[in-house]
Image: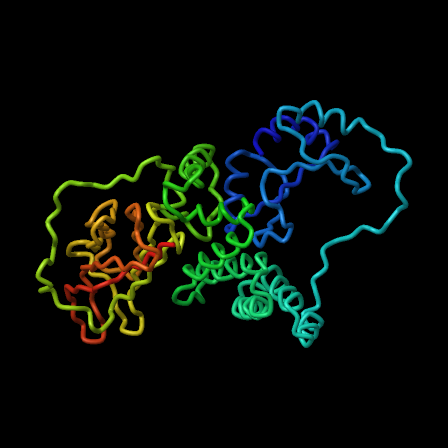
Length: 399
């Protein structure tokens, strides 16, 4: 987009041309930050569900003053010359006049009535409408409608992708449920398996996946953007969800494992277990299924159990995750740790990401990667601060 902006900004300033962008992002607020960084003033439309059905981007279209598409696929190298020629062009005769149109909010009563016929299309239309117009208030209803559509049409790839988008949206909301992120990734992968030519869907998985499968760093520009915006005396646009480590990570051609000898922190299993589940652990594997010899990225979230009024004790050592991979499996590091924040206590979600690589010739089966987490946690019910261990099993499926 910056190239197109530089090539057309004089025509924009003269009011001879209007540029509009459409993004396929899961988190559209990030586009707002990008536009602020590059000082571009275009309207940006959002199509997180890929309702347009495009399989790759960018796509450029030239639309005249009558709303007629005159050209598709203008190369960036021709942008300036084409824009000058396009605004000077007169198209005769003009089409019959028609009333201006604007997006109309659908009638959810009618959409609901259509589901009485119990067709996949009717359920998907309801799910799409709720996802576009009613989020976040009716996320559960949207997810339920997508699931009903898939029951009726299991091979509908677009519906599976939309369900994945809805699950990830709920994961990012206050209404999140266990495994929402994993379900999102699984449905994106199933959609891609049904339509392997879909670039948009592939990128959505790679966004959270391992470096061996990344085409580029998806959001490495965020830090520089904020720094430069602040230097201009502006406040950077807020992000609803901060990019994760996977979204900052750059591609890698080889798997990097730290081979230095690391002493296991609790080899005899003497640390008391967190039987009260003061900390809840959720694991998401991206992609959910890998080929023999391929890698996956694991996202591990540690959440204080608010039912027990649990919180982190930050005056002791930070959290450590120890991994015991099966023979032949490689991990970036067997010990992965997090430093504590400066506050004495806190209740934030703590996240770790790491990558694991299967051996060549691995059997096509689910593989459990055993490990355990060590952490200092307090529970307000009895006022006790404890050092606890929680055993975990991280599953990776090989096909």
